[in-house]
Length: 424
Image (tube, rainbow, N blue to C red; front, side, top):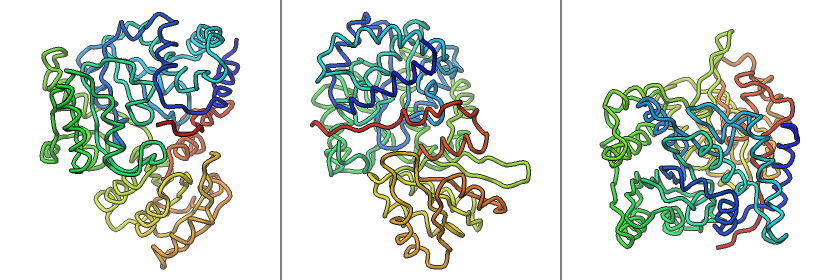
Protein backbone atom coordinates (compact mmCIF):
# COMPACT_ATOMS: atom_id res chain seq x y z
CA UNK A 1 0.00 0.00 0.00
CA UNK A 2 1.26 3.47 -0.88
CA UNK A 3 0.48 6.66 1.04
CA UNK A 4 -1.92 7.93 -1.68
CA UNK A 5 -3.70 4.55 -1.49
CA UNK A 6 -4.00 4.85 2.29
CA UNK A 7 -5.45 8.36 1.96
CA UNK A 8 -7.89 7.12 -0.70
CA UNK A 9 -8.99 4.32 1.63
CA UNK A 10 -9.64 6.85 4.40
CA UNK A 11 -11.41 9.12 1.95
CA UNK A 12 -13.72 6.29 0.88
CA UNK A 13 -14.80 5.87 4.52
CA UNK A 14 -16.71 9.14 4.10
CA UNK A 15 -19.40 7.10 2.34
CA UNK A 16 -20.35 5.80 5.77
CA UNK A 17 -21.12 9.36 6.85
CA UNK A 18 -20.93 10.56 10.42
CA UNK A 19 -22.64 8.65 13.19
CA UNK A 20 -22.82 9.61 16.82
CA UNK A 21 -22.32 6.73 19.24
CA UNK A 22 -19.54 4.78 20.95
CA UNK A 23 -20.36 1.18 20.00
CA UNK A 24 -18.21 1.01 16.86
CA UNK A 25 -15.23 2.78 18.39
CA UNK A 26 -15.28 0.58 21.49
CA UNK A 27 -15.42 -2.57 19.35
CA UNK A 28 -12.71 -1.40 16.96
CA UNK A 29 -10.44 -0.40 19.84
CA UNK A 30 -10.98 -3.79 21.45
CA UNK A 31 -10.11 -5.60 18.21
CA UNK A 32 -6.72 -3.85 18.13
CA UNK A 33 -5.96 -4.50 21.80
CA UNK A 34 -7.51 -1.47 23.56
CA UNK A 35 -4.45 0.79 23.15
CA UNK A 36 -6.14 3.56 25.15
CA UNK A 37 -5.80 1.45 28.32
CA UNK A 38 -2.04 2.09 28.15
CA UNK A 39 -2.40 5.88 27.94
CA UNK A 40 -3.29 8.92 30.05
CA UNK A 41 -5.56 11.61 28.61
CA UNK A 42 -6.83 15.13 29.03
CA UNK A 43 -10.16 15.20 27.18
CA UNK A 44 -11.12 18.60 25.76
CA UNK A 45 -14.53 19.67 24.44
CA UNK A 46 -16.16 23.04 23.78
CA UNK A 47 -17.67 25.09 20.98
CA UNK A 48 -14.71 27.40 20.36
CA UNK A 49 -11.15 27.43 21.63
CA UNK A 50 -10.78 23.71 22.29
CA UNK A 51 -8.02 23.32 19.69
CA UNK A 52 -6.14 26.31 21.09
CA UNK A 53 -6.51 25.03 24.66
CA UNK A 54 -5.20 21.64 23.49
CA UNK A 55 -2.20 23.30 21.84
CA UNK A 56 -1.44 25.22 25.05
CA UNK A 57 -1.66 22.14 27.26
CA UNK A 58 0.54 20.20 24.85
CA UNK A 59 3.10 23.00 24.74
CA UNK A 60 3.39 23.27 28.53
CA UNK A 61 3.66 19.53 29.18
CA UNK A 62 6.22 19.19 26.39
CA UNK A 63 8.21 22.03 27.99
CA UNK A 64 8.08 19.98 31.20
CA UNK A 65 9.79 17.10 29.40
CA UNK A 66 6.83 14.81 28.77
CA UNK A 67 6.25 12.94 25.53
CA UNK A 68 2.87 14.36 24.52
CA UNK A 69 0.38 13.10 21.97
CA UNK A 70 -2.00 15.62 20.41
CA UNK A 71 -5.22 14.62 18.64
CA UNK A 72 -7.22 17.40 16.97
CA UNK A 73 -9.51 18.00 13.99
CA UNK A 74 -10.01 19.14 11.33
CA UNK A 75 -6.61 19.31 9.67
CA UNK A 76 -5.80 22.44 7.67
CA UNK A 77 -3.64 20.96 4.90
CA UNK A 78 -2.24 17.49 5.66
CA UNK A 79 -3.98 14.56 7.34
CA UNK A 80 -0.99 14.00 9.65
CA UNK A 81 -1.77 17.25 11.51
CA UNK A 82 -4.54 15.38 13.33
CA UNK A 83 -2.17 12.96 15.06
CA UNK A 84 1.05 14.44 16.49
CA UNK A 85 3.67 13.44 19.04
CA UNK A 86 5.69 16.33 20.49
CA UNK A 87 4.20 18.36 17.61
CA UNK A 88 5.61 16.01 14.97
CA UNK A 89 2.76 14.93 12.66
CA UNK A 90 2.37 11.20 12.12
CA UNK A 91 4.56 10.19 9.17
CA UNK A 92 3.19 9.04 5.83
CA UNK A 93 4.89 5.69 6.40
CA UNK A 94 3.12 5.29 9.75
CA UNK A 95 -0.25 6.27 8.21
CA UNK A 96 0.23 3.44 5.71
CA UNK A 97 1.20 0.97 8.46
CA UNK A 98 -1.80 1.88 10.64
CA UNK A 99 -4.19 1.73 7.69
CA UNK A 100 -2.90 -1.73 6.73
CA UNK A 101 -3.37 -2.85 10.34
CA UNK A 102 -6.97 -1.62 10.64
CA UNK A 103 -8.35 -2.25 7.15
CA UNK A 104 -8.82 -6.07 7.42
CA UNK A 105 -10.49 -5.69 10.83
CA UNK A 106 -13.30 -3.60 9.33
CA UNK A 107 -14.72 -6.70 7.63
CA UNK A 108 -15.84 -7.86 11.10
CA UNK A 109 -18.50 -5.12 11.14
CA UNK A 110 -21.90 -5.56 9.47
CA UNK A 111 -22.44 -3.33 6.42
CA UNK A 112 -25.03 -1.18 8.18
CA UNK A 113 -22.67 -0.59 11.14
CA UNK A 114 -19.44 0.03 9.24
CA UNK A 115 -17.04 2.33 11.13
CA UNK A 116 -16.89 5.91 9.86
CA UNK A 117 -13.81 7.91 8.90
CA UNK A 118 -13.64 9.60 12.31
CA UNK A 119 -14.09 6.34 14.23
CA UNK A 120 -11.26 4.71 12.28
CA UNK A 121 -8.95 7.72 12.64
CA UNK A 122 -9.66 7.88 16.40
CA UNK A 123 -8.46 4.30 16.83
CA UNK A 124 -5.50 4.90 14.50
CA UNK A 125 -4.49 7.76 16.79
CA UNK A 126 -4.76 5.55 19.89
CA UNK A 127 -2.53 2.94 18.24
CA UNK A 128 0.04 5.54 17.24
CA UNK A 129 0.18 7.14 20.69
CA UNK A 130 0.54 3.73 22.34
CA UNK A 131 3.28 2.71 19.86
CA UNK A 132 5.08 5.98 20.60
CA UNK A 133 4.77 5.41 24.37
CA UNK A 134 3.31 8.84 25.04
CA UNK A 135 3.35 9.99 28.66
CA UNK A 136 0.16 11.98 28.07
CA UNK A 137 -2.35 12.51 25.26
CA UNK A 138 -4.21 15.80 24.81
CA UNK A 139 -7.42 14.51 23.25
CA UNK A 140 -9.86 16.84 21.46
CA UNK A 141 -13.45 15.82 20.78
CA UNK A 142 -14.67 15.85 17.20
CA UNK A 143 -18.35 16.78 17.53
CA UNK A 144 -20.18 17.28 20.82
CA UNK A 145 -18.86 14.92 23.45
CA UNK A 146 -21.35 12.43 24.87
CA UNK A 147 -21.59 10.32 21.70
CA UNK A 148 -18.31 11.42 20.12
CA UNK A 149 -15.90 8.63 19.18
CA UNK A 150 -13.22 10.12 21.46
CA UNK A 151 -15.43 9.54 24.52
CA UNK A 152 -14.27 5.93 25.02
CA UNK A 153 -11.40 7.08 27.25
CA UNK A 154 -11.33 7.76 31.00
CA UNK A 155 -9.18 10.90 31.25
CA UNK A 156 -7.22 12.45 34.10
CA UNK A 157 -9.33 15.57 33.59
CA UNK A 158 -12.21 16.69 31.39
CA UNK A 159 -12.14 20.22 29.96
CA UNK A 160 -15.04 22.18 28.46
CA UNK A 161 -13.73 25.49 27.11
CA UNK A 162 -17.08 27.19 26.47
CA UNK A 163 -20.60 26.64 25.17
CA UNK A 164 -21.87 28.62 22.16
CA UNK A 165 -24.13 27.98 19.21
CA UNK A 166 -22.77 25.59 16.56
CA UNK A 167 -23.78 22.23 15.05
CA UNK A 168 -27.35 22.69 16.31
CA UNK A 169 -28.55 20.03 13.86
CA UNK A 170 -26.55 17.49 15.84
CA UNK A 171 -26.37 18.93 19.34
CA UNK A 172 -29.72 20.69 19.79
CA UNK A 173 -31.08 24.20 19.40
CA UNK A 174 -30.49 25.55 22.94
CA UNK A 175 -27.34 26.26 24.92
CA UNK A 176 -28.62 23.81 27.54
CA UNK A 177 -28.91 20.97 25.03
CA UNK A 178 -25.49 21.76 23.53
CA UNK A 179 -24.02 21.86 27.05
CA UNK A 180 -25.62 18.50 27.82
CA UNK A 181 -23.82 16.92 24.86
CA UNK A 182 -20.47 18.53 25.73
CA UNK A 183 -20.88 17.58 29.42
CA UNK A 184 -21.12 13.97 28.27
CA UNK A 185 -17.31 13.80 28.52
CA UNK A 186 -17.52 14.23 32.32
CA UNK A 187 -16.72 10.93 34.06
CA UNK A 188 -17.47 9.79 37.61
CA UNK A 189 -14.96 11.25 40.05
CA UNK A 190 -12.80 12.78 37.29
CA UNK A 191 -12.15 16.52 37.75
CA UNK A 192 -13.68 18.86 35.18
CA UNK A 193 -12.53 22.38 34.23
CA UNK A 194 -14.69 24.86 32.34
CA UNK A 195 -14.54 28.44 31.16
CA UNK A 196 -18.27 28.45 30.36
CA UNK A 197 -20.01 31.66 31.43
CA UNK A 198 -23.52 31.36 29.96
CA UNK A 199 -25.78 30.60 32.97
CA UNK A 200 -28.04 28.23 31.04
CA UNK A 201 -25.07 26.13 29.90
CA UNK A 202 -23.12 26.38 33.14
CA UNK A 203 -26.08 25.06 35.09
CA UNK A 204 -26.07 21.86 33.00
CA UNK A 205 -22.32 21.35 33.52
CA UNK A 206 -22.63 21.97 37.26
CA UNK A 207 -25.52 19.51 37.60
CA UNK A 208 -23.71 16.83 35.58
CA UNK A 209 -20.52 17.23 37.62
CA UNK A 210 -22.47 17.09 40.88
CA UNK A 211 -24.36 13.95 39.82
CA UNK A 212 -21.11 12.20 38.88
CA UNK A 213 -19.19 13.48 41.94
CA UNK A 214 -16.69 15.09 39.56
CA UNK A 215 -14.88 18.03 41.20
CA UNK A 216 -15.67 21.15 39.14
CA UNK A 217 -13.19 23.98 38.59
CA UNK A 218 -14.82 27.08 37.12
CA UNK A 219 -12.52 29.57 35.36
CA UNK A 220 -13.50 33.24 35.51
CA UNK A 221 -12.64 36.06 33.11
CA UNK A 222 -10.48 37.67 35.81
CA UNK A 223 -8.09 34.71 35.71
CA UNK A 224 -7.13 35.61 32.14
CA UNK A 225 -5.73 38.98 33.24
CA UNK A 226 -1.97 39.13 33.16
CA UNK A 227 -1.49 35.90 31.24
CA UNK A 228 1.00 36.12 28.38
CA UNK A 229 0.41 33.85 25.40
CA UNK A 230 1.98 33.88 21.93
CA UNK A 231 -1.39 33.61 20.17
CA UNK A 232 -3.20 36.84 19.25
CA UNK A 233 -6.63 37.60 20.68
CA UNK A 234 -8.09 38.39 24.09
CA UNK A 235 -10.06 35.15 23.80
CA UNK A 236 -6.77 33.25 23.72
CA UNK A 237 -5.98 34.58 27.17
CA UNK A 238 -9.27 33.08 28.29
CA UNK A 239 -8.31 29.77 26.68
CA UNK A 240 -4.94 30.05 28.43
CA UNK A 241 -6.71 30.57 31.78
CA UNK A 242 -8.64 27.33 31.18
CA UNK A 243 -5.38 25.55 30.33
CA UNK A 244 -3.61 26.93 33.42
CA UNK A 245 -6.53 25.88 35.65
CA UNK A 246 -6.29 22.36 34.17
CA UNK A 247 -2.55 22.31 34.87
CA UNK A 248 -3.33 23.28 38.47
CA UNK A 249 -5.94 20.55 38.90
CA UNK A 250 -3.46 17.94 37.60
CA UNK A 251 -0.44 19.28 39.50
CA UNK A 252 -0.44 16.37 42.01
CA UNK A 253 -0.33 13.85 39.13
CA UNK A 254 1.59 15.78 36.46
CA UNK A 255 3.66 18.44 38.21
CA UNK A 256 4.85 21.39 36.13
CA UNK A 257 6.84 24.43 37.21
CA UNK A 258 5.80 28.05 36.74
CA UNK A 259 8.70 28.38 34.29
CA UNK A 260 7.39 25.49 32.16
CA UNK A 261 3.98 27.16 32.08
CA UNK A 262 5.56 30.45 31.00
CA UNK A 263 7.63 28.78 28.28
CA UNK A 264 4.70 26.69 27.07
CA UNK A 265 2.27 29.60 26.76
CA UNK A 266 4.74 32.03 25.19
CA UNK A 267 5.91 29.49 22.59
CA UNK A 268 2.63 27.81 21.69
CA UNK A 269 1.77 27.64 17.98
CA UNK A 270 -1.66 27.04 16.50
CA UNK A 271 -1.90 27.74 12.77
CA UNK A 272 -4.83 29.48 11.13
CA UNK A 273 -6.10 31.23 14.25
CA UNK A 274 -5.44 34.98 14.03
CA UNK A 275 -2.22 34.08 12.23
CA UNK A 276 -0.52 37.09 10.65
CA UNK A 277 1.66 36.40 7.63
CA UNK A 278 3.80 39.25 6.25
CA UNK A 279 4.73 38.85 2.58
CA UNK A 280 8.06 40.01 1.17
CA UNK A 281 6.35 43.08 -0.32
CA UNK A 282 5.15 44.11 3.17
CA UNK A 283 1.55 43.04 2.55
CA UNK A 284 -0.01 41.47 5.64
CA UNK A 285 -2.43 38.55 5.45
CA UNK A 286 -4.47 37.61 8.51
CA UNK A 287 -5.74 34.02 8.51
CA UNK A 288 -8.47 33.11 10.97
CA UNK A 289 -10.70 30.05 10.95
CA UNK A 290 -13.67 31.95 12.42
CA UNK A 291 -16.24 29.34 11.41
CA UNK A 292 -19.26 30.20 13.58
CA UNK A 293 -20.79 33.35 15.14
CA UNK A 294 -18.70 32.98 18.30
CA UNK A 295 -15.53 32.81 16.24
CA UNK A 296 -16.65 35.75 14.10
CA UNK A 297 -17.22 37.83 17.26
CA UNK A 298 -13.67 37.05 18.40
CA UNK A 299 -12.23 37.99 15.00
CA UNK A 300 -14.22 41.25 14.95
CA UNK A 301 -12.93 42.10 18.44
CA UNK A 302 -9.35 41.26 17.43
CA UNK A 303 -9.57 43.55 14.38
CA UNK A 304 -10.66 46.40 16.68
CA UNK A 305 -7.97 45.66 19.29
CA UNK A 306 -4.90 44.83 17.22
CA UNK A 307 -5.61 46.58 13.91
CA UNK A 308 -7.57 49.65 14.97
CA UNK A 309 -8.16 52.03 12.05
CA UNK A 310 -6.82 49.48 9.53
CA UNK A 311 -9.81 47.96 7.81
CA UNK A 312 -8.72 44.94 5.77
CA UNK A 313 -9.95 43.67 2.46
CA UNK A 314 -11.97 40.73 3.77
CA UNK A 315 -12.05 37.43 1.87
CA UNK A 316 -14.95 35.47 3.27
CA UNK A 317 -16.03 31.87 2.62
CA UNK A 318 -18.55 30.13 4.91
CA UNK A 319 -20.24 26.74 5.10
CA UNK A 320 -24.00 26.75 4.53
CA UNK A 321 -24.79 24.87 7.76
CA UNK A 322 -23.37 27.72 9.83
CA UNK A 323 -25.24 30.88 10.87
CA UNK A 324 -23.70 32.75 7.94
CA UNK A 325 -26.08 35.78 8.05
CA UNK A 326 -24.92 36.55 11.60
CA UNK A 327 -21.27 36.01 10.63
CA UNK A 328 -21.62 38.44 7.70
CA UNK A 329 -23.27 40.99 10.00
CA UNK A 330 -20.34 40.76 12.42
CA UNK A 331 -17.48 40.82 9.92
CA UNK A 332 -18.56 42.94 6.91
CA UNK A 333 -18.59 46.25 8.89
CA UNK A 334 -14.91 45.70 9.78
CA UNK A 335 -13.83 45.54 6.12
CA UNK A 336 -12.79 48.14 3.54
CA UNK A 337 -14.23 45.79 0.91
CA UNK A 338 -15.55 42.23 0.92
CA UNK A 339 -14.65 39.45 -1.50
CA UNK A 340 -16.93 36.42 -1.23
CA UNK A 341 -15.65 33.00 -2.28
CA UNK A 342 -16.94 29.42 -2.32
CA UNK A 343 -15.36 26.96 0.11
CA UNK A 344 -14.03 23.70 -1.40
CA UNK A 345 -16.78 21.73 0.31
CA UNK A 346 -20.09 20.15 -0.57
CA UNK A 347 -21.52 22.31 2.20
CA UNK A 348 -20.33 25.69 0.93
CA UNK A 349 -22.61 28.70 1.16
CA UNK A 350 -22.94 30.36 -2.25
CA UNK A 351 -21.22 33.78 -2.47
CA UNK A 352 -24.33 35.29 -4.04
CA UNK A 353 -26.33 34.51 -0.92
CA UNK A 354 -23.75 36.15 1.34
CA UNK A 355 -23.53 39.28 -0.81
CA UNK A 356 -26.92 40.68 0.14
CA UNK A 357 -26.22 40.47 3.88
CA UNK A 358 -22.73 41.96 3.47
CA UNK A 359 -24.15 44.87 1.42
CA UNK A 360 -26.76 45.57 4.08
CA UNK A 361 -24.21 45.29 6.91
CA UNK A 362 -21.69 47.64 5.30
CA UNK A 363 -23.36 49.74 2.55
CA UNK A 364 -20.21 51.79 1.99
CA UNK A 365 -17.96 48.85 1.16
CA UNK A 366 -17.72 47.26 -2.30
CA UNK A 367 -18.78 43.60 -2.29
CA UNK A 368 -17.30 41.33 -4.96
CA UNK A 369 -18.28 37.73 -5.71
CA UNK A 370 -15.28 35.64 -6.79
CA UNK A 371 -15.21 32.22 -8.37
CA UNK A 372 -12.38 30.96 -6.15
CA UNK A 373 -10.10 31.86 -3.29
CA UNK A 374 -7.21 32.01 -5.76
CA UNK A 375 -9.07 34.69 -7.75
CA UNK A 376 -9.81 36.67 -4.57
CA UNK A 377 -6.17 36.57 -3.45
CA UNK A 378 -5.11 37.76 -6.92
CA UNK A 379 -7.66 40.60 -6.77
CA UNK A 380 -6.20 41.78 -3.43
CA UNK A 381 -2.51 41.60 -4.36
CA UNK A 382 -2.15 45.37 -4.07
CA UNK A 383 -3.98 45.57 -0.73
CA UNK A 384 -1.68 46.28 2.24
CA UNK A 385 -3.89 44.29 4.64
CA UNK A 386 -6.04 41.27 3.78
CA UNK A 387 -8.05 39.02 6.12
CA UNK A 388 -9.17 35.51 5.10
CA UNK A 389 -11.88 34.02 7.30
CA UNK A 390 -15.09 32.03 7.58
CA UNK A 391 -14.02 28.38 7.47
CA UNK A 392 -11.01 26.32 8.51
CA UNK A 393 -11.27 24.58 5.13
CA UNK A 394 -10.69 27.97 3.50
CA UNK A 395 -7.71 28.68 5.75
CA UNK A 396 -6.05 25.41 4.71
CA UNK A 397 -6.52 26.30 1.05
CA UNK A 398 -5.06 29.78 1.69
CA UNK A 399 -2.02 28.28 3.41
CA UNK A 400 -1.28 26.22 0.30
CA UNK A 401 -1.95 29.05 -2.17
CA UNK A 402 0.25 31.44 -0.17
CA UNK A 403 2.94 28.72 0.20
CA UNK A 404 2.81 29.02 3.99
CA UNK A 405 2.39 25.26 4.05
CA UNK A 406 3.83 22.70 1.65
CA UNK A 407 1.46 22.07 -1.26
CA UNK A 408 0.20 18.50 -1.30
CA UNK A 409 0.49 16.53 -4.55
CA UNK A 410 -3.18 15.71 -4.10
CA UNK A 411 -5.32 17.78 -1.74
CA UNK A 412 -6.08 16.07 1.57
CA UNK A 413 -8.51 18.78 2.72
CA UNK A 414 -11.48 16.83 1.35
CA UNK A 415 -10.91 14.28 4.10
CA UNK A 416 -12.52 16.85 6.40
CA UNK A 417 -15.89 16.38 4.70
CA UNK A 418 -18.46 14.44 6.62
CA UNK A 419 -22.15 13.79 6.18
CA UNK A 420 -24.68 11.52 7.76
CA UNK A 421 -27.76 12.19 9.81
CA UNK A 422 -28.18 13.06 13.49
CA UNK A 423 -28.87 10.14 15.80
CA UNK A 424 -29.67 11.44 19.27
